[in-house]
Image 1: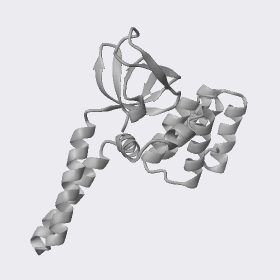
Image 2 (image 1 turned 30 degrees about the horizontal axis):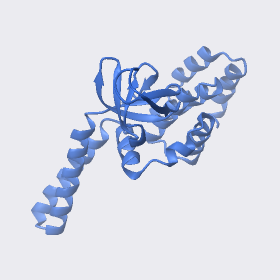
Image 3 (image 1 turned 90 degrees about the horizontal axis):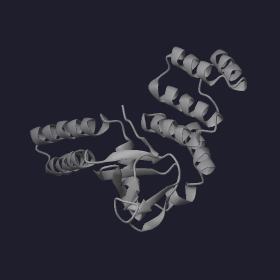
Length: 218
């Protein structure tokens, strides 16, 4: 994993990192005034260097979902997943879990933008009386609208440490298994300090909510 900065900027950052002056390194990153996705990636790099792998995964994932599509970012995320030892668990997720969690990870403006694009396509198709595209953009618009409405019901988290999951919202219920550190999961409802895990489906039970990082989106 490496920083994404200009040569001169990298020299200064490397000096802070080598001296383990993390606060100065973070302040220097802020002063660089980089694009949001690059700033997120570099923030993830700093967390990685400090051994904060869950936080590193959080920032690197956010950088990718904010538009930083590159081999470097993908490799960095894979490296962090290996450090957290969750590659096998994440690769075992089914299509629904992957789609659901990926969609929740997108910036808030993405789905409404896609809905607007679908509506524009529908209006143009109606004007040109093209039946195929009328149906196509209608289905696409309905799909995005349903997805946006449905996904607003969920909150997204990264597990900050290994967490036990229970059959019910109390430790008096049977402990079923452990949700591993660094795994992303969505929550559909809460009872006091307990949350019901909606996805991944293999962890679709109750978890105590204090040991997680909420996935905040721009």
